[in-house]
Image (tube, rainbow, N blue to C red; front, side, top):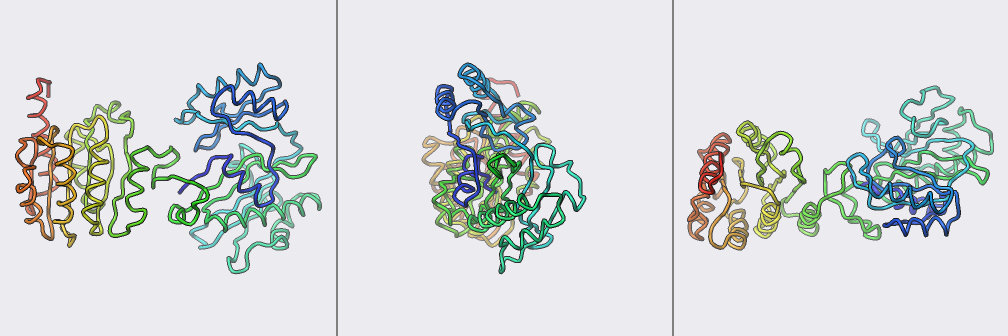
Amino acid sequence: MARLQEHQGKELLRKAGIAVLPGRIADRVDDAVAAAEAIGYPVALKAQIPAGKRGFAGGVRFANDRNEANAEAAALFSATIHGHRVARLLVEKKAVIERELYVAVLSDTARRAPVIMVSTKGGMDIEEAGHDKRTLAVGAVDILRGAPAYFCLDLICDLDLPGAVAAALAQVMARLYRVYRTYDCTLAEINPLALTRDGLVALDARIALDDDALFRHPELGIERSLEVGDRAPTALELAAAKIDEHDHRGSAHFVQIDPDGSLARRDGKILIGFDGIGTGVSMAVMDELVPLGFLPMNFCDTSGNPTASKLYRITKIILAQPMIEGYVFASCLSSQQLDNTARGIVKAFREIFPRGATIPCVFSFRGAWDETALAMFDEHGITKSRLVRLLGRDSTEQDVAVALSELHREWRADAGRPP
């Protein structure tokens, strides 16, 4: 799921005809102050991070003059909110709010349809809003018919809203649904949708796109790696995501489990690079590695018979991770053409370690063309390093973990470090 930041989502709303407040993006304190001066006080300064509930965490602040804008911007740029360092602010005119509403269009997997949800109790406490039909309206949308304004007005007819507000809200709902459909969203949410003296205004926007549809929207300029949650993707994840971008022959799926090493430090684990053919064997190997003191810095699945060029590129990315003290490749018993797999890995190793591997490396080749794959490592001199261990079709996941542990102890002993 590719989640847009607030200012990106609001731009889509603005283009769809939904009112948003005047605002500017700032990457520095001086830029934020200049934006506030141009917009006119009072202003709101809002941290742009891929996480919700910023208000509770101090990520939204207000300023009534230049001194306050400078102080609040400086405080935000030095803050870390929900684990995200604030690097960008949205500076907006502060709204005078008469009432807060909530409106969203989301993908409902149970109904297998888009669902429109509206509440008359918007704001930060939306999760605690009641389910009374006078305060909450929910309805599935037939994608062949869409959600025209009359459909939306009928959906909210029981809500406790004045007629003029209900009519304006129905227009916002219809336009938000068009955003949802146009950009292949999984979620399009406005919270709060504020009633002001100038009408309904979107004070926040949470827009999430289906990762599989990103190629249809190059105009958005979204760089995204899969399954990284709310955090921003790392440079290595973005590089890995490009491997499958124009070539769908097998996968080179890569995500960093512990990108900054904080989990390993907390639990006293040793970080390693990891690549597996098949999620099942990957999890089984990890189950054996962790009790022996190791933690994969990344998860990687190179299954589906990817080309040698994909293995070459992903292996270089895995080994580019800082702090790793080992590398493991493990295959499942499958029909994947392992000689192609080995060809890519060998090329990467010869470039990265021209004089032989300098960290413990264990390879387990089990499946089609496994003997050819193992022979290729010998032919190209990869096994000349005493830090490389090759395992064949009779090896188990436990054998892989034990082999790495033994090599790692030898490696540390050679370096004069305690085990």
